[in-house]
Image (tube, rainbow, N blue to C red; front, side, top):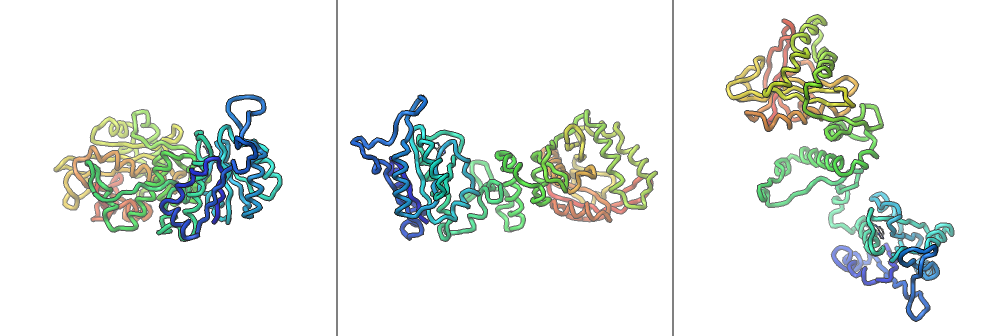
Length: 437
Ligand code: ADE
């Protein structure tokens, strides 16, 4: 690959002799030809600029000088791509870099002052011999195009075959797959009271991959919402969507547009909405032998607005909601137990003391498969953690509810035993599952 870099400050490009770029030059994989634009001037002062037509501050680089330089370099090298750094160009992306890396040769015309006379770009674009690419490296103004030229050279060169010692590092980095990279750590494992995340210190590669992917998405949602907006929800896994829903990005299972959701602790204003979700969803969790009448009685006694308000008012209960434009789309309820206490319906001899009981998680049917359940589930666990008395979480779920059991298993829960769960006098066989808090 060959770059022809044209500038009035050719020394700027001396840094390309360093490190991997220097090695690539030495090996012949990369050729860098640096040209001093002033070599194409003819006056005593080697003038490359003049005052702007129409007035205004600063100087503009002359089309005639640039034209001669570009024509000569094209004639010598056969270059077909002209890249022009300018703050008014297209924001350079990894996708652009990938495309440009397919060229054999690229000329970079680095302007100074108020830029290059517009006719240079217009002429070469319309002449058709060169692909002209005006690009910006960010929404700020530099003194000239040289730094942006270096950015282009380095970002392209590192994609060339054999440039990187370990080509895998190319597939894992920021902007590959429209996300920014996950955070990285090295020894020491503890530094100034900060620990390297535990999962990275273990050897469970599937868990490490899942953690990294979640962190990547979390960071992208926080700092680059524009990248999430460009991503089709359909292209993401359920685990990905669970992470994004936590940060407010929600799309129904078969939708291709994102919508906004807020997962937050419940207030008394949410009681009516939670009661509605409870009444709509509770029957779904019941096995067929629980009659409609028994379901109704259970809802009236255990999921009324009064009962829900009492949870929200109690320091021993934590209630979270998913607020979708003012409507409640899902809710959770967690109960905190002190040492010696525990949920009545879980045998105390199979669980640790002071359990945190994940009592309820319900999501309206239209949001199933959207990632919302996973988002509110993990949010509720994080919300409970600082208030818990012990270190174990416990839940019970109907033994026949495979969908729910699979969901809990995916979130790190393990089955440790059974219990009987009563719905309006009807016995139900549940499994008891636990997870470290
Ligand atoms: N020249 C001056 N500022 C620039 C920027 N932000 N990107 C590309 N070229 C430039």
